View 1 (cartoon, rainbow, N blue to C red):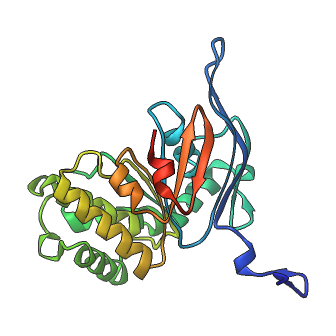
View 2: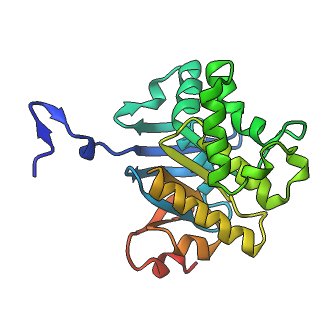
Amino acid sequence: MDDKKDGIISEKAIPLLETRQITKVYGEKIKTQVLHGVDLIIEKKEFVSIIGPSGCGKTTLLNILGTLDNATSGEIIFEGKNLTAMKPDELAAFRNQNLGFIFQFHHLLPEFTAIENVLIPTWIKDKRSGMKHKEHAEYLLETVGLKEYMNKKSTDLSGGQQQRVAIARALINSPQIILADEPTGNLDTESTAQAYELFRKINHELHTTMLIVTHDSELARKSDRIIKMKDGLIEKDCRTGVDECIEY
C-alpha cells in the first residue's frame, strides 16, 4: 500500500527515531572509535532492549540518541526532523519536551520530596509548576505505586521506590520515548520485576516507546525486539527468536 497521499507522507511511514551511519570517535592524538556506522530504526510504541558485552557501544549509542552526546559523523532523525542540524539551545528544548531518561543511578535531589523531584522537568520547561502539572505528577506517582509517598523526602525511600520516582519524573513531560540505561542495575530481583511491569504498563497504556540498554537477559527476553551490539556495530536485530540474540 502506498503510504503517500497527495504528496503527504503518512504517520505510519515515518519512524519515530532513526540513525544513519552514526560513528563516534574519542580522543585527539590517540583516537578510539566506539561506534562504526550504526544504522537503526525505532518505530513508535516499540519496546526494545539493546544488549551486548561491556564496551560494545551500547551506552554511547543511547547517549547519542538522547542528544546527550554528539556523534562524530552521521545523522539522528526524529520523526523526520534532523537533530544533528539543531543548535544546542534547540536541542535542549527538544530533549526536555520529547525524551525521557532513566539511569542506573536515579539522581534524585535529596532535599526534595518525591513529587518535587518528579516536577523538576516542568520547572525547566515552563519555569514553574501549575496545578495541572501537580495533578499530572500525582497521577504518575499513583501509576508507579507511590501515591502515599509523594510528600516524603527521596532519602526516606527505598532504592526501588527511588527508581520509581525517577520513572515518574521521566514521564512528567509526556515524552514520546523513554531512553533507559541499565535502569534495573541497582535493584534486587523483586524490584527489577516491578520495574519491568511498570515499563510495560507505560508502553501499553501511555503508548510510550521504550528503548532500554540492559545486561539483564531476563528483562531483555521479555522485550518485543532485541538489538545485539558487538564492537560498535549492530550484530543482530531480533524480533522473533529472541533467545538467539541473548546468547553472548
